[in-house]
Length: 210
Image 1: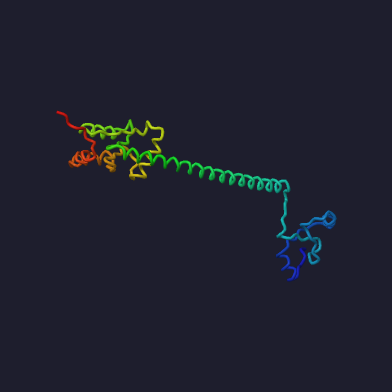
Image 2: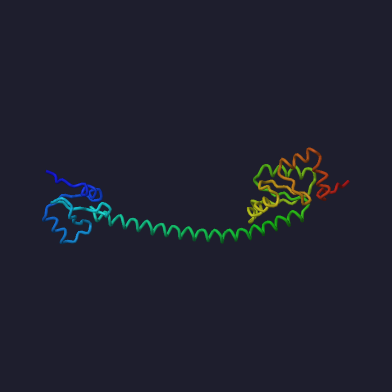
């Protein structure tokens, strides 16, 4: 028959798990100093108590593997954050270098625009650029053509033009230091009769010889 516990013992049973064992095993565990198990004077005869909140490893090798695995994860995370920090520092350095190159490109683009009556920033393979250059040539305009794909700093100049004019695409046309726009804008001005007077005012038209 199972032992009968009083109400006070019942309350204590909520915090302890009673595990039946023989007296010889209990004495042996006491001698070996089992820290997970404690004897309870109120426990029924032939029972011992085990604290429910105490860690119990039924498989010590598995617990050791889990601890080692957690350590490896922590080490990997530490290395990851160190690499991320190093990459962020490298990005700052590259960004600073790129900022200096962009400043040089802006100065170069401004010089080209101010020193030439007509500047067409183009790319040699672009069909829209070809149409604009053909249009300006057909009406006798002298122009400076900058093929960005053939320039060593073409990408930097294109980025500089985006800052100066708000346009990154090509063709990008400037007349008399004024930003005209792309193929559609230049063609529209010509159809409205506004392109020739603008070219003439900038001194870009070739003199007509008899």
